[in-house]
Image (cartoon, rainbow, N blue to C red; front, side, top):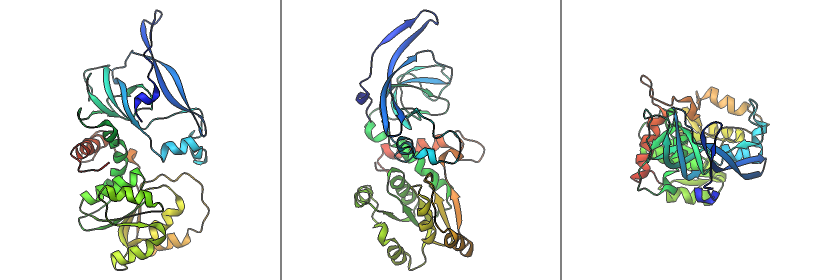
Length: 321
């Protein structure tokens, strides 16, 4: 999404009481399920020491997380206040830093940065958490996709993949396509599947050669692995019933990586799935990206360095958008 699509408002006023310059920005708000509004908001230019003021160039939509908010699916989630409306939007933001609260940040004024900020013409980002400089000369409509690849890399980090391992990725949305490419970069033999031929075609355009439609999955996996099933299966959708399908395609001593976040309630017989997990010593591994530290700790990989690598891979076209 281009910032220009929000028709940025260049209005400023001086607040004499607080002695602040107030700017007008436009932001996408989900007023209620299936109703998004563009709202004009006040944004003062006073910055805390950890903040950077960013003029948005592009932002990106997460079909899973933000789609759940748009449709109202979050109301089915069994915890927290996820079902509250109105709700803000925003997952990944690419833009120019036009002000900083401190010099001790990961960015400076004039940098072009990727942040975890909202769909708005101007945002204040936590620049100690994530406001990572990216190349100035690379197309922004491609670079902003680094945000989604940052979700995908947690599947790779969570696994025990080794070169030559068979890895099946179920679901060819943005997260699944990036996950497949990252496992390929690690030397794995990758197959991907989806119900949609359109999505499989997008995967092939990104260099993923082994694709199959979901209805043909069982036969295709058996042919591919000589009946042994895949060593690692990644569920990249977040549908509970599909986890059952993922386990059925996993080899003895293998791993099922839950990359998608299940949200909708489901009623089905889980005993065959649990029995296979038990009998074949299969591991189920959650790989939500936020389980990793933002910054480096002793002997632990971190989110910021993941994004540094992803930005470089996209800029050098090792990772296809």
